Length: 213
Image 1 (cartoon, rainbow, N blue to C red):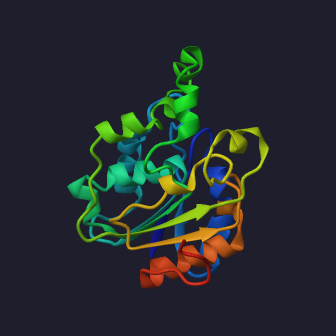
Image 2 (image 1 turned 120 degrees about the vertical axis):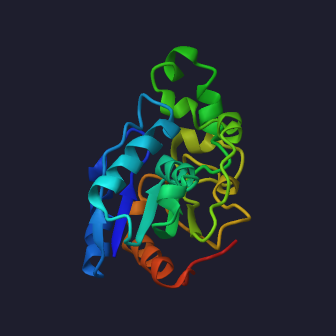
Image 3 (image 1 turned 60 degrees about the horizontal axis):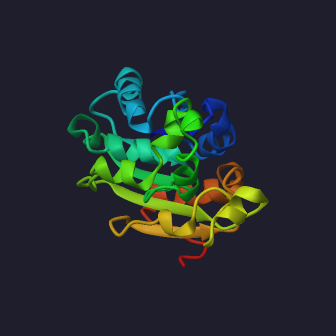
């Protein structure tokens, strides 16, 4: 089965090559697009991702979606599209700020910065809420969060976090399963343990081997 891997803010398709290799060893065919997730609001990438899926997959075949950080928000927004949601079996969101990012809110005070890096601006809680992203029918979603906080940015967040995203922002009530791993935001999707959990969820709709709280 094909798996679409969706990178996060200020990254490109190379950021998912380690997980691509792991998943391909388990028999998946991985497709990894590069999306405009630096200078445009994240929801603009939904159109690009939809066009990519329509180009490289058959509308009658089932696919899975896996996203890291902002890529997970792109996936959730895409799953509101009826043309795409019929194709999707399961989705895994890794370190995704589903309820917004405190650091993005802080960055919003620097107007000159977010006016250039508009993807970051769109990670503010208020921006995400106004998109009214709804849970898709028939698609099971699993979420993975990290708790290894290091560096100045991690210290700016007053609650448990992965150095970039607060833990409380990752899970949503409508998700099928949720698991926590002891990794930093920038390393979590490069870990073989994470890839193994992604494989578990894509196969069975649940995680094993981590912490759920």
